[in-house]
Amino acid sequence: MKTRRHIKIQEIISKEIIRTQEDLAKKLLEAGFVVTQATVSRDIKELGLIKIPGNDDEYHYAIPAEQYPLNNQERLKRILRETVVSVDDSENLVLIRTLPGNAHALASIIDNSNWLEVIGTVAGDDTILLVVKPKEAAAVVCKRIYDLLG
Figure 1 (cartoon, rainbow, N blue to C red):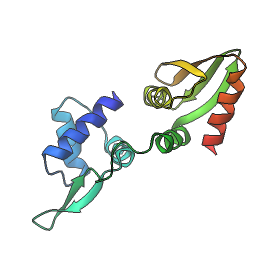
Figure 2: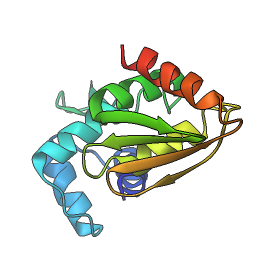
Figure 3: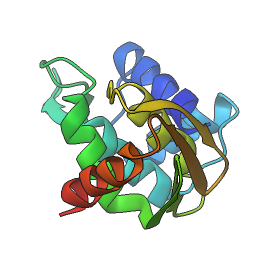
């Protein structure tokens, strides 16, 4: 849901002039996404949206000129720090608990991080299961996650 919402936000911002978070929340509602102001604020931050001056000297949201998404490693670090509640491992499995609603986004980023030891992820609402091969690499993956957490 979050990924689809982010894609819709980028689409809205690129096609229309959106001056406020309220304007964006209304457009998202029209598109079938029920969001709070806090969610919109978080999405703006995660997408790295900026405000630029328009022709009428009023500012509106825009996608930054540099390539989006941000460096995957930096995104991974930021989302880990913002959402992870706990990390544990057993044999060849690593279990990551997140704040509710964040597991899918984090699992997707991990899947795209090309960690050779991780052969796949399964995500629920607030839990991610990483399948690791060989089983000895589970400790390596946990250490990598803890290092990124700071």
